[in-house]
Length: 229
Image (cartoon, one colour):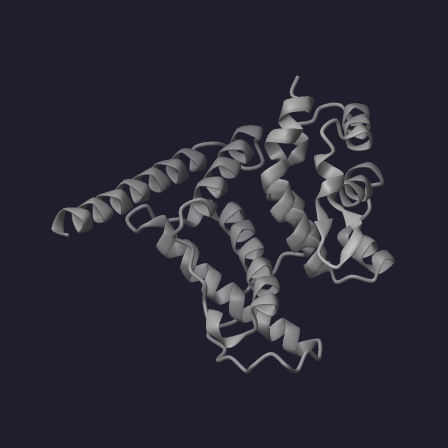
């Protein structure tokens, strides 16, 4: 038992060191540079796979509603981490910073839903006010597909042909006609905003973005397989 506990602590320390090292490496690249974007993507993937992300107030909402709230808060948190990575203090574990911001963003998302008149969300204490709230379209900067794709016609052909039928197989729950393929076409080929797409489909922006970004993380290897130069 003691050995297992020691092993768990050791693994946690190893993960903390890996994340700290990646964060420090990311900060060395100039803002907006391709190198920083790539380093941020790797850092975000490491965070998502860490198993250390918090789930604030999970027991206060039905699971389906909590999933939407949580995914929106997580997206905003990851975007904030990417935008403010230079503010990270390596003297503290990166996940402590990430989960601290996630808690704030979750509360902000809940308050935003309440302002929209969604009254079945329980009241939560307001911890603080976030000074900067990115628009949902800024999420494109979180996973910059452009780094993988250098030819717009190549992307267009790939989305249309979908060689392994993976893009069309990813369907939004309760909306089988809304696929990752159709959303990617609207976003990357037709260059439409999420607000425009959501309005046209009659589905909330949050729901579309939660679905799209979850699937995109899984499909990145598929994109790279067929679009890498």
